[in-house]
Image 1 (cartoon, rainbow, N blue to C red):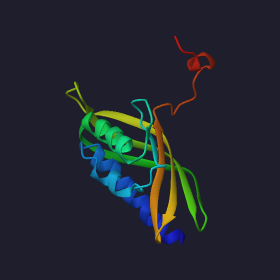
Image 2: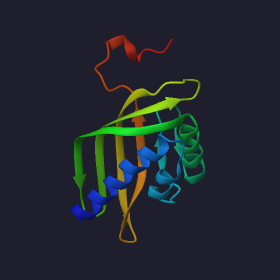
Image 3: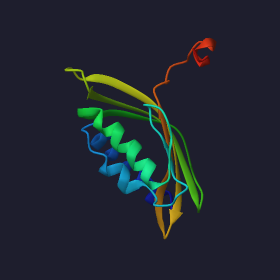
Image 4: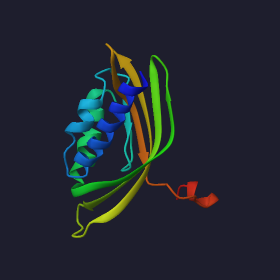
Length: 142
C-alpha cells in the first residue's frame, strides 16, 4: 500500500513541474471527482467541488511559465488503508506573469488523499508561501 502511494507522490511532483510550465492537467488528473474536494492555492481563496477546484488550478497555472521543480522536502507522511497525507516544502523556479526572469518559489503544502476504487485520489491541497517563520503581527489583517 505504501509503495503505490509513493507512486502518487511522484505523480504529484510531476504535476508541480507541469503547473510551473502553465499546464494544470497533472493536478486535474490527480484529483477525485467528488464534490467534497478542496484546493487552497497560494494565490488565495479556496475552491470546493470539481468546477471550483479546476478554476483554481487553471488560474494558478496561468500565472506560471517556463518553470521547473528543484526540490521536495518531505516534512511528514502517513498512509492508512483509506486515507493518506503529505506535508512538504515544494521548491521550483518559474517565470511569474509580468516577470521576465526565472525566480525561486517555495511553498509549504499539505495534501490529503483518499482511496477510491483501489486508487489514491487527491481530495485536498493547500499551498502557501509562508515557509519561513513569521513575526506575530504577520497574521493581522489591515
